Length: 178
Image (cartoon, rainbow, N blue to C red; front, side):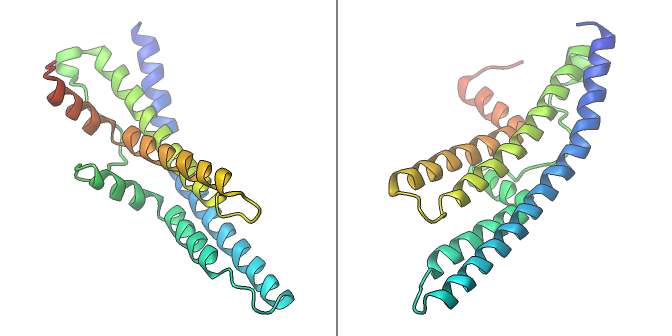
């Protein structure tokens, strides 16, 4: 890989990551607010139309998921701590040593930075998928599928955000040293 391609990749990763993290956090907040407003307005309409309607379990579940979407960075940090890591960092990755690997380290760090951003997107997609399982009209099978795929996306997203910790854990468990 030439130096120009590496510098273009590093520049691309720097620019996309800084604005991408902000975009994902804003999208999570907007989805949270719209989801909360939507579920509360639907339940108030149903309560007026059908006295005795009791959908409080779904309302509480959706509101909790909306809170998780609004605090997506905190949810990623809590997910990382469940795997035994000290929490998630939302900075650019500097995992590979430039003194040892030179220009290739810049490219590897840029790719890991983009993987971290992709992980944040996956976490939001996972939470939205779990929220989708609460829709009325879902059968138990489709709701279970939504919850399963949502949890898998959430976990894979946390792994991608914490990729340096994951790589360290893999190296230590497999006995690989660079």
